[in-house]
Amino acid sequence: MDLLLWITIGFIIIGFVVLTSMKKGLESKLAFIKANMEDTENSIKAKSIIWWIVSTTAWGLVSMFLVVWWFHNHFG
Image 1 (tube, rainbow, N blue to C red):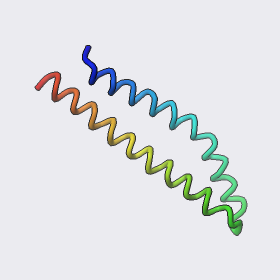
Image 2: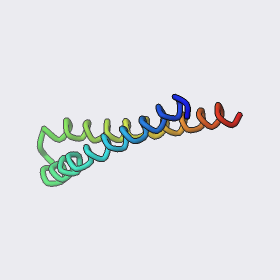
Image 3: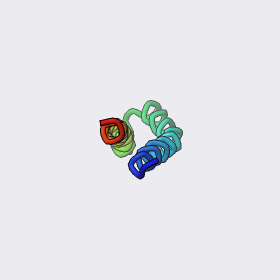
């Protein structure tokens, strides 16, 4: 097994663990935003939720790129 495969597997597993561990906190922030619609703290909490979505999307794209790159190097 080559290094690129281990980097790919490690990136996917570590990213999945980090994103799922953050999920519970973000659910509570979303519940707070829904309960307190006029609160000024909502914009900060909403930005953290948006950044979690952006980082999840980036993690998914990089993971797909690494998998395709490994297949290209291994079978190409």
